[in-house]
Amino acid sequence: MASSSSSITSLSSTLPSGLTFLLNNVSSLIPIKLDSTNYIIWKTLMQNTFRANQLFGYIDGSIPCPPLEIINSSGDQLANPLYLQWIIIDNHLLSCITATLTPSILPHVVGFSHAFEVWFALAQRHSSLSRSHIHELKLKLMNIKKDTTMEAYLDQIKQYVDRLASAGTPIPTEDIVLYTLNGLPSEYASFKTSIRTKSEPISVTDLNSLLGSEEIHLAMKNSSTPSFDNIVAFTASRRNGPQGGRSSNSPSQFSNNHP
Image 1 (cartoon, rainbow, N blue to C red):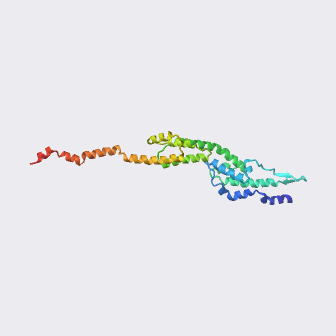
Image 2 (cartoon, rainbow, N blue to C red):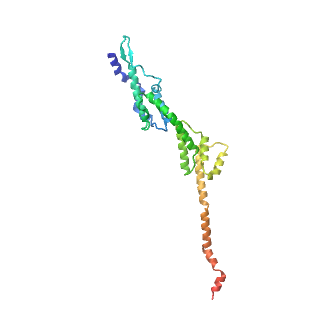
Image 3 (cartoon, rainbow, N blue to C red):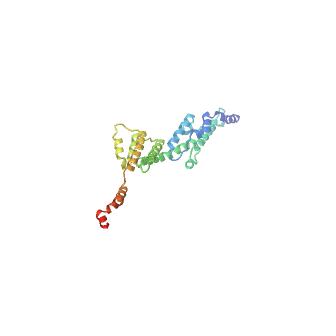
């Protein structure tokens, strides 16, 4: 029994050094919390952190739980210090994982006792959620239309592209250009033609810069072109203005009123 007590007492000194570092720095190492939209990036951060601290084997199951008890050379059944060590490490890792979950995700891991169980449960749940979310974002990007300022329009496209990239589905530059052009209204028809007929591919940055200039050009063009209502109002004022008044004083009327 003395040997068993000694083993238990020395557990704290035999825990992996990376575990202490992880416990003290989890909030800075994992700056985001898992929700329904960011599983891929959360998983990547967690994997990199666990591997860097030589702890991922406890997460993916490659370091299984040792037996609860062992039998020594005398045939005595003793508590297995490796089991106790594994349980302590596992509990700490479980705490690290749950500390990075949002309140909406926490209910889905209730009832699991080990870090690897929570890890696989989250993977199973979010694999289907991620596919659905990616499909939804792709549809929004493909069908986006410019119904506001150019800056807001391009910002919305960038948000969709960034969210898809964070979900593990980066969008090629040529597709971003295509979706951006397709969403422009008819007044940008000549601009779209000029971009599509370029011999060299255009970057998203250059396209956005040109679109900003084109928006200004169209705004100036529209402001310098009189509207139909303005033309009608101008014509009416010409008919009823000073020239019309003078024309009513014809020579015959003047001569008839002269004594």
